[in-house]
Length: 393
Image 1 (cartoon, helix red, strand yellow):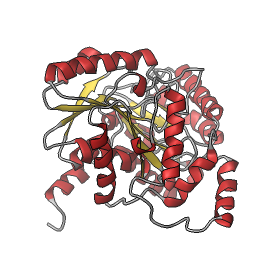
Image 2 (spheres, one colour):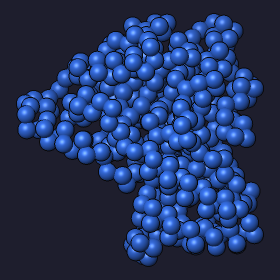
Image 3 (tube, helix red, strand yellow):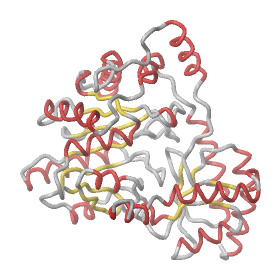
């Protein structure tokens, strides 16, 4: 066998999202791109705000040494910029040493798990959860444990309590959530923080609250997500600008540590080392130079809210059952049949590409990404209507 047994096993259960995306590429070759409606991958079509390109041009014309190595944690000025922004948002005093720039949120999570996990340590994810968490935890010898949310996809502390053990090292949350679009309020995260402090007392060691936040700035309906830094001292934020600046392919993000964390200095130093030994070395240099130029710049959430309203109103009008999303650019309808794989296959006959909920730890649902052109969504609706009729909704 040319590849490892572990990798062979991982490939057999690899991401449904990527499988559907690749199926979409095949179907486009057969039917033409305009006739295939791929809602599988959250790959935003919105261009970055105009300030992004203007700032890049200015940087390239006026600076030297933009592409050189820098300290492994990132450019000091960029880290201080991020720390100042976090201080302003939270009222806490962050230092640049609390921030490590990362190769997107995925790189940041891997650097963090490498830093905190011993073999067989457990990380609890709240299902539905982002599909790659299991691979990221496994990369560093840990074990992903699943606690299901309630019927509205909010954290259920009873379900969480049932899976906590002496090996629990962290709980990871994602709000606004991929795949459901739900948002955890400040009250919800406060309750989660209080729960974890009781668990720390019970088990006699710190338990990290990790917040994966690439969608934090894409929220609707005047709803605002809670802030883990205000809810639990042993908290870590991991985020990227893939979505809120439309820079998914540029892979720029950061890891931020609570300034009152136990063993704060040890984790700071560990992250500097792990980002190097994992092979990232540095986050992309040009993007690090760019970020301080873009203070307050974001894509327009109103555009995604409009697409959410279009899709949600149409699908619920057809009879699909959906918990209304208040952020990100996903929704997670209930499958009209128990086996959502059957539904996904039927959707393929209409050239609709969707992602089964079991890929997110929640069978019986399916995910729709709606970060696409309005025209594409409008043209797809007659196909969803035929699906609804097929299942008697």
